[in-house]
Image 1 (cartoon, helix red, strand yellow):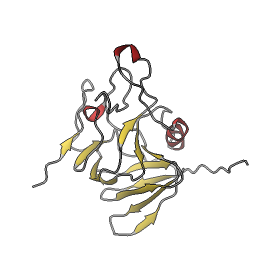
Image 2 (image 1 turned 90 degrees about the vertical axis):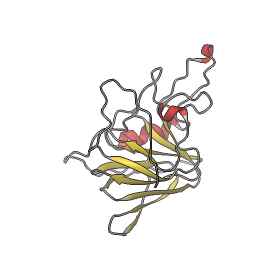
Image 3 (image 1 turned 30 degrees about the vertical axis):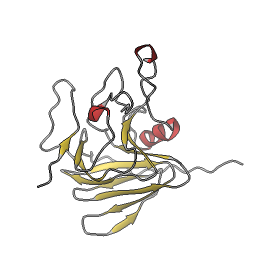
Image 4 (image 1 turned 90 degrees about the horizontal axis):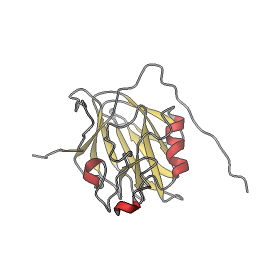
Length: 197
C-alpha cells in the first residue's frame, strides 16, 4: 500500500480539505519547491536567502492568472514534476522555457505552451518534462496553493529547512492542496512578447 505524505500546514483555522482540490505528486522532478518573493533579511540569524530565483517569471506566472503578484508558486529546475489533479477544476500557468504536456482524463495529450493559462480538470495530469533554454520554470495556480508562511514568506529554504514541507524539496506521493476550485468567470489568457536584439 502506498502511503501519501502531507505537506505540513500551520495556518490558523486552516482545514485540510477533504473536498479541496489537490495535486498528487507522481514524479517529484529535480529541485521542486514552493517559492515566493522570499525572506531575505534574516542573515543576522544565520538564515540564507530564499525566494524564486527568476523573479520575472515568478511574477509573470501570477500576472497571467490574475493572482496577487507574490502568490507562492512551484519552482522546478531541469526536470519538473508529474502532477495529477484530484477534487475539482483549476486554472494553471507555466512560465520559463519549459516543455510540458497536459494528459487529459480521456488519455488525450495536449502539448502545453508557456505564458498561457489552462483549465485542468479532475483526473488530468500535468507532465512538466523539462526546462529548455531556461534553468528554472514556474507553475502557478489560480487562487494559489494552500501553504503556510514562516517569517513572512512561503518560500522553501532547503539549506535551513524552513518553509512548507518542513523546508524540504517535494517527493513522490505527496499531496499539494490548493486554496480554491476555479470560478466560472475564469478566462484563458496568453502573454505574447518578442525579444529585442
